[in-house]
Length: 169
Image 1 (tube, one colour):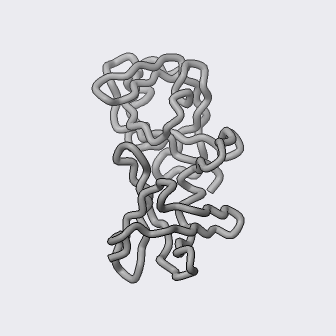
Image 2: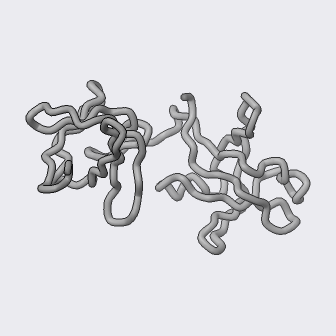
């Protein structure tokens, strides 16, 4: 994968070319005026580079206006497309912070070496992320907190946890 999804275009808004976007990123600066993004349209292999020249939030959606797209007819075909950034344009994170794509696919095991499964998804319900780990047909929810997640080894794609009582039941 050469890019990361940061938003999904779910609809147009008004007649002046605004698009309604569901945000898939924690980085608010992705949607600032002047930011460059790429549009990945369904069923098209190439990416289309766009620059944001207008941004506002309305009813929990980001409403974006793209430079050079000034009416609804210009953006109508972008519905169901994704806004993406190239991986090389990502910023470095602090210690113990990870991009979702770095965690998804990692093996999870206990500190004693017992294999739990693989991270298949990450949920963001509130205070902390929850990693969904697939184990023999069932899913285990691992909270990303210091008390549970002890080691994240990106080179080995391995995560070591100290399960709380009842976590693996």
